[in-house]
Amino acid sequence: MLITIKEIENISETQVEITCKEIGPDILCLDRYIRLFSKTLVAKQGGNVILIHAKDIFYIETIERRTFVYTEKSIFETDFRLFELEEQLSDYNFFRVSKSIILNLQKVDALSPELNRTLLAVLKNGEKVYISRQYTRELKNLLARKGGWV
Image (cartoon, rainbow, N blue to C red; front, side, top):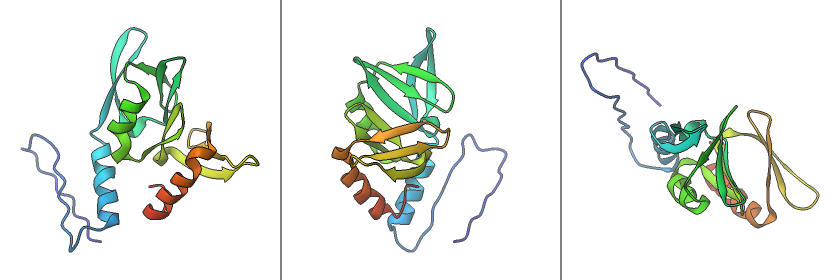
């Protein structure tokens, strides 16, 4: 793979162009990863409205009809419902792992099986998230198709 980076002073925004012989799974994965950098989510913290970059989200959880967004060190609340966020983020390596949690697969450091046929996801910040049995097969199939969780 040939990578070229050009610095041009008089452009208004960064442009990324991918030139390839054919569009395969690795190119589509690269495209999703690049688009992840511009995807944002509106949330609140302490009365302030904040834009969170999707690449910074570790997971999203609903607790008692309230939806929380977890980053490496902070927790935010959003007015979106979990199914809405699942739709918005499905192209960006986010995956529903239980009825109440959507996980950013790029923030997973390790997966390990548990005795009750669930999976334990250890995140890059040390937090642990359990993946329910209902979602483990679909996750394993997804990871097999993508060749990993990048």
